[in-house]
Image (cartoon, rainbow, N blue to C red; front, side):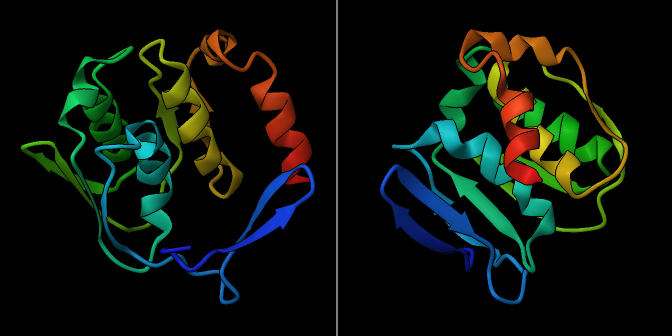
Length: 147
């Protein structure tokens, strides 16, 4: 909602609808209590209308992989300016280019950056099978939802 999306509560879940003008808003988010969403926010940040800053997430360096490094490497490969200082990630939106997304064998890296491939040609996920850890048929479901 902070980025301009509309949430619709349904009987079996919540549907996230894009902003009416299809432009996500930039902003600042402290994800210290919800850090699993850092990768998803970082993956959609390049498509926002303004800078995205994610703070309180220094500890994600020590999860399945160094997730801060994964964000920096993959966004840089996509042609996006990104920096990190003391657990705060700053992403400057820009034109995303296709590239190989390094998953570092981390299911959340693969799933989050796959979203970029929905709107940018040439995004390829290295070892998509690493998603088996939590969501074996993720890419099948993503394809069905996106249709």
